[in-house]
Length: 72
Image (cartoon, rainbow, N blue to C red; front, top):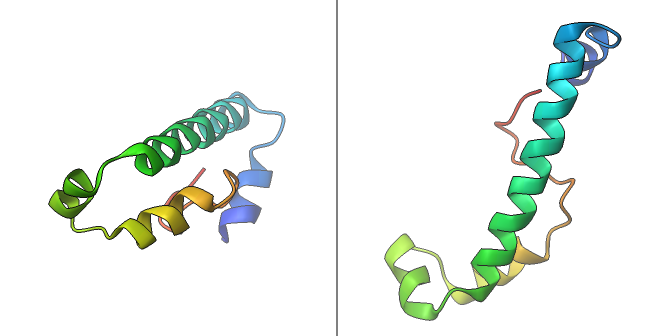
């Protein structure tokens, strides 16, 4: 079962409601993390092994573009 089909199959159920809340919460969390990443100084980014350019690219991504390993 694919990610999208799996998410849609729970629609209208308690599990589906939890999945939607979980997804919204994760999208908001992701948005906050990307905002924080954009504000970090170069030393903090280097400690994480991220270049300034990589941080800028990630911070510029829209909130709906979640990492591939996230599920509903």
